[in-house]
Length: 137
Image 1 (tube, rainbow, N blue to C red):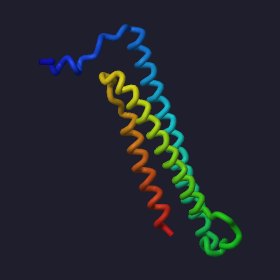
Image 2: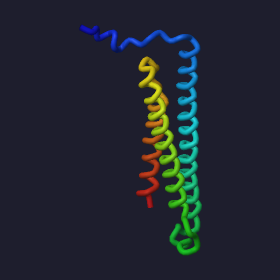
Image 3: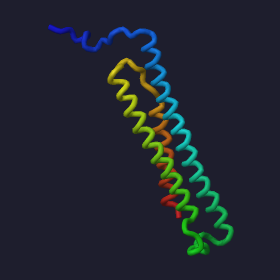
């Protein structure tokens, strides 16, 4: 009868292989964190632009006066930037999850990361701002 523990045990890796795996894992971490940074910038820039122009337009009587003069208004621009940030974050998270999943299949003892949690928190923040911009007239 086969010992259950033997199935889960990994062969002892040499130092060079172990360090190569660690470098790859850390490279994935850096990649997802740079995507989080970029998407956070897009989300905050979109919401800031939306709020800035909302305040600016209220001084001259509101956005109704500008209808027909612009192809895209500040609200649409802000929503587009926030959506772009969320889409880029979702694509980066998918790539990160796929790559780390592949690495984890080969080396299951790889430590878990908090980068996915950070990406999820930024996605929640961005989604909240998108809803606010969408619903706020």
